[in-house]
Length: 198
Image (cartoon, rainbow, N blue to C red; front, side):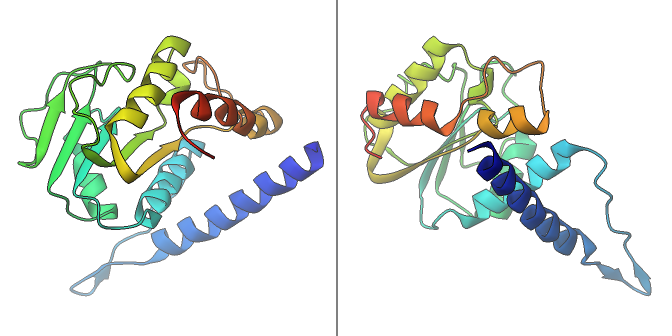
């Protein structure tokens, strides 16, 4: 099993490396000068690019989106660039104050991931939480999944990205701010408990 996980992680990193190199090697021509491609100096660059790739691959058409853990105006700019425009974007953030320069379609909700009670039932097309679950205490994690089930419209999408504990433990990637890095088996237990069918 470990060899399968290692091979899968290696294949994923190879694919991601090629994707990022291709994306960053495209140059913008301004007059006679070409911009210099960015260098990836940190594993977190790969994680961010992977999140961009994930977001761009989500089926289009969501009109109401809820992002849990959105941390600033840059997040909504990034979302619009990678996914496209939407009618309403609910940003849930507990640890930062509401930015003054939010886009007009953004509704800022100061709340924890485990308490989305201010969001009406079946009102969200896409619920997104990126690089967030690994920071949550178990009670907030369970609350998040229960509220996710409640607020999503029938046919809505729950999209999460979080380090896979099965892989990070094998490649030695550790983030001291993480409470837990969950495995796919963990998710297979937690999601049905909140009402989701796998």
